[in-house]
Length: 327
Image (tube, rainbow, N blue to C red; front, side, top):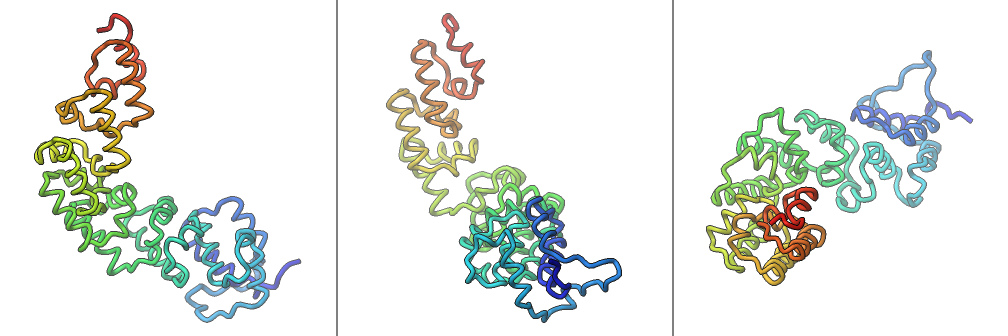
């Protein structure tokens, strides 16, 4: 049974909005929407645009239509029509609406117009529509950001402080979407200043390879990593030299990475600090899947192999190094 065209306005508005995102609909969602809508014949008068219908009153049948939509069936019937409309829009964009609404409660009151404005702004900065699901999925707070006070300063920081050209904004943001939800004044600039004092001079590497360092807390994340390296016997200068050679050290957990790996290195491998100083990438390898198995094989073979070769070599190269007579 077909509905009269007046009953299809809300979903058409939503579809129009989602089309303006230039996001392709998933097949299931597209089919569901197609079956739910009443399309006009060529002779009918086109529906007014969103801007021409600011005060559209949703009819009971319209609400009922959206409530019965396949994408809404898991939702509780008490959820408002506006929230359900928002859920559909997020799902069509490829964003987990449940996770987004849970992690960013402000989304409950955000308008679709404001979300659309944010998407248009990001696209104006070179972000592609295919990047949006991952960005919003990782950082749903972006969906309720203030363009003037939150987002523009981030792109100014990328341009002015990290010297990122406009056509490379996408590369930096895709590498670390958390940049978009980080305060330039309280987070990004202080962190950049600290890293530069340590000796991180390659702005290009910070922008495109290690931007996660810029969204790390200096006092609670970066400094404790250096202090741990000092606590196991390295001097301050040696610890700094290690993180400059392997910036990923700043991203590892002291309790879950540094301590168990160093304990194994010191107690089971009888390793020396000079080996770690030359090869700080040791901490980047899996203890159970790489370090332990290869160390056991080295011990059984009786062949002495430098730490770097033991871990970085391919399985074929490693097998060749430990075969009988290889030493």
